[in-house]
Image (cartoon, rainbow, N blue to C red; front, top):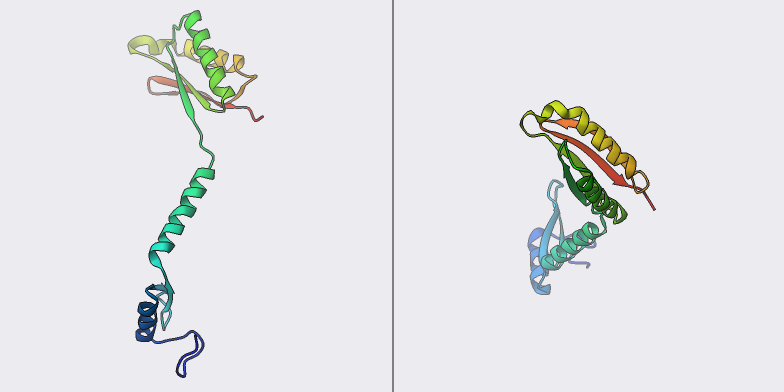
Length: 152
């Protein structure tokens, strides 16, 4: 808009407020640090709505990583081990990461070699569906290992 002796689109703040009121819109300050401050006449609620919509769309396109946990004991029975291995196989096929851990209770911490052997065997048997992202690592009373699914 060209106004009374002003450069195209440049108005004093009072005139800008008047124009915003006439149009039923909001006057939004874009760059307050510049002299004179830069303002824009927009529908602020609509702007916020569109901004929120863009953020939601970006969030939905982001890859969601699902981590499934499988818990073992150092003396896990063969049947229980196979049952948990089959579940982990299905999780990896579905594209989820598997966090396998051996939980040591009380004096069982003396069997940490058994726990490490168990987790390495677990990773070896699931090698067709997933790759060990992290080797067995002892954190307190838990020995943790993460297996990520293979790319298709």
